[in-house]
Length: 362
Image (tube, rainbow, N blue to C red; front, side, top):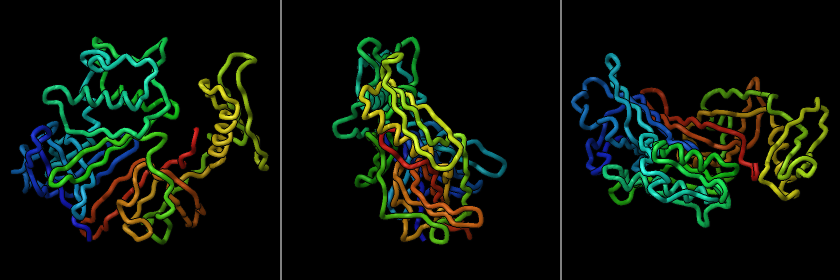
């Protein structure tokens, strides 16, 4: 049985406040382009640990599994409820929602007249951590070569005004909400005896297609899986619109006949000036829209087919579900996952939140 340990450190000094917190009802995990979260409870008999070792807004909470650091973040909420003391934490990037651009253009790093959004993400963290009492020690890792995506233009540069006090989390969100923009997630790891925290920015994607692990009913999927079938997004015909105006607009259609009622969708990509690229996008979008059944969530146990922690946010994984209602076999992308350590008779499980697999250009 894996050994789990939870500890807290001071957000600025790194001082260890509690080496082994007695937590129950624990769940934690990362997510795609978000901070992830951790929830747990301290029993009343350990109230002497509160509040110094669990000071909300000033304490880092960490989770370790078999001496591997799995998760870390800021403790935010410690509100007692009857005979329980629940705790809620969020990843380090949640701190950006509590910090604002008070100088404009991230302290003079902008404006950004067509800048790689990866650079803007790094600048937001630089600005955040340069202020006194604002350094969480987060290391931002950018993709080699950056990305070809651009934020702002020469005519309309991206900028933030000091009188607007823009939240730094909004700046990062703007940088990642671009079409085919970069993705990011949080990771933690031991560096000697010091827990390191990282923001990993990737382009064109996080994760990869994993052929070495899989999830299947009767093997490592622990609970029944609902596989919704929705036709609202379905289409065999995709009309893609590119750059240009009126009759000069680049336009292509990708269509198939498959014995079903014809359904159409429009893909608007005004930045695309190449007809071949637009056709590729239309094909990928049509293939994506022809998948009606999707698996949105699975709960799995530790198994050689996919040991817990062997996957990463952004990975495409093979999922096979066979039960009285469903016969599904396909690729899904992990957008978040939550680990729940064993407790009493309940075994250790991980719940994976899934989406359709990553496709280039869509």
